[in-house]
Amino acid sequence: MDGTFQRIRELAKRYEPDMTRFLRDMIALPSESCGEREVVERIRREMEKVGFDEVTVDPMGNVLGTLGTGDRLVAFDAHVDTVGIGNRKNWTFDPYGGFEDGERIGGRGASDQEGGMASMVYGGKIMKDLGLLEGLRVVMVGSVQEEDCDGLCWQYLVREGGLRPEFVVSTEPTDGRIHRGQRGRMEIRVRTSGVSCHGSAPERGDNAIYKMAPILRELRALHENLQDDPFLGKGSLTVSEIFSSSPSRCAVADGCWISIDRRLTAGETKEGALRQIRNLPSVAEARAEVSLYTYERPSYTGLVYPTECFFPSWVLEEDHPVTRSMVEAFRGVLEREPVVDKWTFSTNGVAIMGLLGIPCIGFGPGHEDQAHAPDEVTWKSELVDCAGVYAALPRIVADRPAR
Image 1 (cartoon, rainbow, N blue to C red):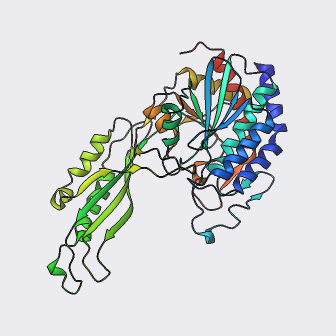
Image 2: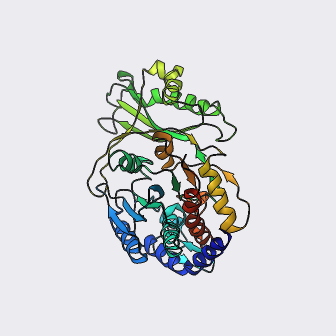
Image 3: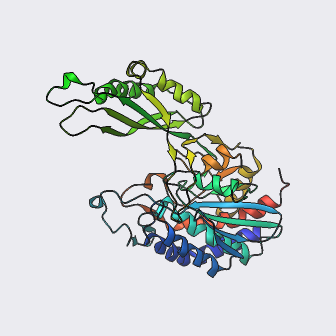
């Protein structure tokens, strides 16, 4: 494919202005989870413009662009929702107006992860331009609600929509590297109960907030002693939210509950993580309730698809054909050796491979440290690099035997 790699490089560079314009258009459309309708419509128009064979929006609101009609089905994924902007004072430019210079594009979603969608669409155009789709059907997915509940959309796509590709490329930001795994995660609730009374005589009641205090200390200590893994790293735990209930501000709290963001490394299980918390002396003494959250927020189309907030860790083997094919595409298009690594944060891969067993590999424009940060940026050169690698990868995989 040496000559093909050269032509891919040339086309990817030629399409840089188109990718830049498309990305800036997406950034200009606020698209927090469950509010993606406008950006999905903008993506649909771009897919149709560049010549996708079919573009549909499913009942959940995911946009799917298809190229080719072959028997080998592969997919690419970019979530098209973003987080909010946080404190506007922390931004030095308009999060949605964005900015552009010779090297970078700024705005909410630039790295996380509308840049991946821009590269995907033009990677698909290059595939079609160069006739690289023989025997292939490539589906480019713009998925919704990932920031709210990563993996939810792919559970729906596979279980309800019947989309089960040979493998999926996640285009989440990878800092110029190839990523082949990540830790899993759980959203856990711990609740204490008390008895309210007038705040002028607190001894008459039982304060649920006070019961939570020793639990918080023991959770902090538990984080320090969680299991480690040489590739994925250490499991982690942090308390992310705290709430309470009381008849008024002049009363003892009769309820208190916290949310825990628990990251699972290789070998850790849902049951084990819950048991670790239930076995804490302070939890037992308070008779606290420990449970998993369930996500059931409607998508922008109104569809509700409830799911338990547990997503396992996953690792694609270093010698897996998909990993080897991605390395080959990277070398061929970019003419340098890749670093093969893993994500620190979570992606739709927790469902694609973690729950559903579909091989998943990651390569995307942007950097992890830009995700959810003020003054978020991505790099034009990475949009070009990723579009080129995406264009080459399915052909390389198709020329290998199916596994």
